[in-house]
Amino acid sequence: MRYLMLVLVFALSACSRTPFWKDNPSSYQSFSTYDNEIQLAPPVNREQHMHVFEIVVWNVVDTQNKVVIGDAKLKLMLDQLNKVYAAASIQFEITETNELHDYYTYESLVENDFYNYYNYLTNYNSPNVIDLYLVDHERNLCYNDGRVRGCAKGRGFTTTGGWLSSIVIPKEDVTNMKIPIHEFGHFFNLEHTHYNYTHQHSGHDCAKTGDKICDTPPDPGAGAYGAMVNYTDCEMYGAYDENGIEFKPMINNYMSYYAPCYMKEYAFTPEQIKVMKDFALDHKRAAFVKTSL
Image (cartoon, rainbow, N blue to C red):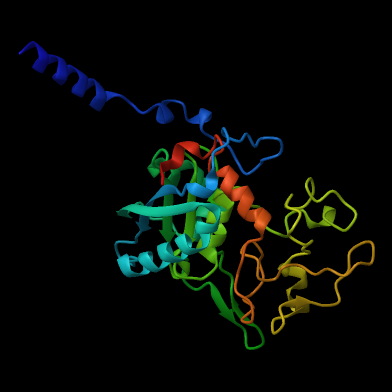
């Protein structure tokens, strides 16, 4: 009987204990600034380990107009993620799929410096898993004035550090061949290839400027230079840096913003893969590793 009482005491104390990450949220908050922050875990033979990360999927649904991404599309996304990230010794498992009726659209999450995301949506995050929120766009984002037509749609965003670590992707992009992989790249410490490109010209220290990865060529960005890309041969023509050297960005890089090149598959560079492989065991991600196979 005495042993039974001890078991009950331990069980009740475990159930009532508030997780540390909720009592001390500031200890878990950080943002995408990695200057001088990378602290690698003790060396292991990464070539013989595959590090598995759990994903919890949240379908954020409007009960009046319910759109849910089902298992078939989630499996397509997961298979593609695992195929690409195997090179970085990273794999993923979807352990839960949930519906969230506290409704936010993509646009409502990003407005006002992501106020709704940081103050409301992250309350549903789980410690040490990747929370993946699938959201709708606002209606009527597409326009056609008779001369110009298009859709002003964002494609996803990622936050980093402890309990704020989560990924938001529009539902229509779940099976896109680039966008989920791109966002998970941010989760493992990759910047855009055009990040801070004005300081990534030839002659500068590639390890300290731009995206801080030396085998991604300087990228002036698709926003201003996308029209100068020949998507047949996947090359940019006619754009030059301050030294008069022609930009030749890797158009088909997963972390770029360029449209698809149908003659070349999307890819990461070897150094991008190394950054992700190392960061998977960094102090910011080590607790997320479910198993190392």
